[in-house]
Structure formats: C-alpha cells, structure tokens
Length: 309
Image (spheres, one colour):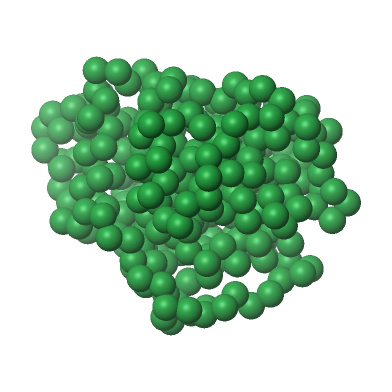
C-alpha cells in the first residue's frame, strides 16, 4: 500500500479524540491572513501543522470585486483530510494573479484542526454552500465557479443536486474527483466487508466510508443523472491516481456540458499522483483553461514526478 493511500486511510484517526463531525471554520475578517506560496503539498502540509487555519496565498480578500473578464469568484473545495492551505497553497495564488477573486475555507472537521473534510459529506457540503452564499453576498456576483480536489470535486455535485447550487454555480472543475468513489486498489472494498470496520472508520472519517465504491451516498448522488444543464463540468484526472481507483472512476458520464481530461493525454511526461495534482503545472493550466475557455492556452509539457511522501 502506497504512502498516499495510507495517509488517506489513517490521517483522520490521529484526531479521533478531537474530531467534531460537521461544519468547521470559514469565518473571516475583511482580508484574512495568508501563508506563503508552496511548491508542493508536502511543504504546505508541514507549514499548516503550525497554522492550520491560515488561508492559502491570494485567497479570502473579502474586499475583492470580480472583474468584467472574470465575473465569477472562484471557490476552492478541499479534498478528504486536507485543510484549505494544504490543498491550495500554490493554485490559489496563480488564480489570484490571473485576476480572480479566490476563496477557500475549512469544513467537515474540528474547528482549528489540521485535518478537515472528514465528516459526513452532506454536512460538509452544507457548510461549503453557506460559505459560497457568503462569497456571493460579499462580492456582488451572481454565480460562483468552483474548483475542487478529490472529495471537494465530488461533493459540490451534492450542493448542486440538493442545496440549490444549480442556480449558484456556473462551472465545476474537479481535480481527481471521487465522482464514483474508490476501492483503493481493492483494499477499501475489502475493509468495508469486514464486520465492524465501516463503523469504526466512520467514527473518525465518515467521508471515507461514503466515498467507497458502491456506497449509499454515491448511489444516491449519481442516480437520475450525474450532471445538470447550465453548468460546465470539467474533470482533470491523472492515470497515476493512487487514491481514487480505478482512476477512470473520476470521470463523469458523457454530456454536452462535460469535459473529461486525462492529464497524460495532454502531457505524457506528467507522472503526478492524487496528492500532487493541485500543485501540478499542467493540471493548473488546464484549470485556468476550464475557467476561461475563451483564452485557453496549451499548458507546457514538462516532466513532473509524483509526490513522494
């Protein structure tokens, strides 16, 4: 079992005594303090151990007003166990530099905890949706664009389906989203069949259970169609995903408003894995293209090794 897989399964257990399932932080002053740009998720995680609630660079300026070219604020939605800084301490600044109003918060974990996005997905998404409403009110925008990683690229679809997001979201860009769950190379599916294991895992990471292939949550989410008209969906996935497996489970059903992109079809030299994709320059270029297709540019193809951790 790879290091990234072990982290995904066990990270929540480290805070079992402190975990409070449901909505976490997200309250902010007019301009929140932000941390520095990081080169990868490992350095970002180390930094956020000492400052787990700090906003990623370029994010959470509540005085920001969207421009005519980029009228929609961008909301960044975290992956399972990740806090906002850990997940977005590079892409957030690139989006801000490109002229976007960028926002990110921490939900689905104990307030102030390093680990976030581990509670029941519905509760996490309700808090995320409330944060989105706050962004719209503060910026005066009519709609949001959302960029999400892993669970954060999937749970927004719950917001769209059940929490009024269809009227509030213009684009959803998922980086290695868990749209059809994961079997973790068969490991999670096996564990889910062992009596007592799902209940034990659920006490520290209900979201992990709900992202298992065949879960009731995913069956309900995907029933009746995976997308809705009027929203542009982009999925950016890597062949070397070692958390969402098989990697093809990230892709959405084909539709006129769906674009599924395999990273290696854009750059065969890119060996980015699940944890590294939000820091990957090719994937970041594809995110910028998805948010502003009228000014799309071909991302430079360079050798990108996987995150080693």
